[in-house]
Every structure is written in structure tokens, then in C-alpha cells.
Length: 65
Image 1 (cartoon, rainbow, N blue to C red):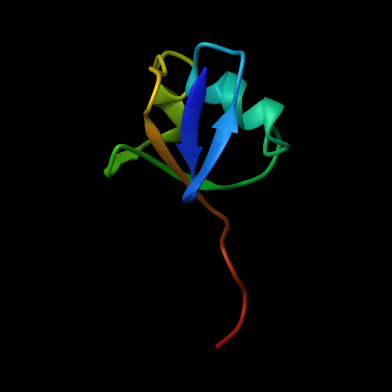
Image 2 (image 1 turned 180 degrees about the vertical axis):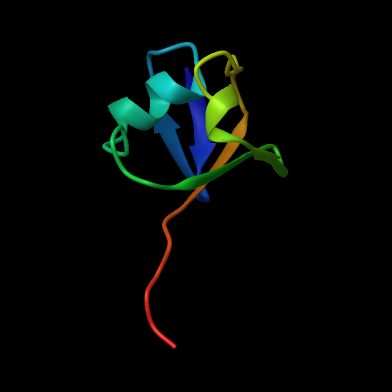
């Protein structure tokens, strides 16, 4: 299915946010996620279904000061 990931159209197969993160290379990364503008906790990723056209934002923490 086609979803928007960080502003880019992506094709993913898995039905959940967790599946999509794995497919896109963020499976084991520590990241924050938002789905359609709403924060999505890590505990909800495995059960949150994706739909065509959803907007997934993936943010990795940055070090610095």
C-alpha cells in the first residue's frame, strides 16, 4: 500500500506501523512516530493498522547542544 513517510511516498506491504518500520529499515532503531499528525507510542505500533494514504512521521533523537 502507498503511504507518506516523512513527506515521501513509500510502498509498504505490512499492515501495521511496526511492519512498515521494519520494511523501511527502522525496525530496531529508537525512534518516535506520529501517524496522521498524532503521536503514536511504541507500545501501539504493533497493533496500529495502516491505510492507504496515511502519513507516517519517523523521528530519530539527535545528540548535541
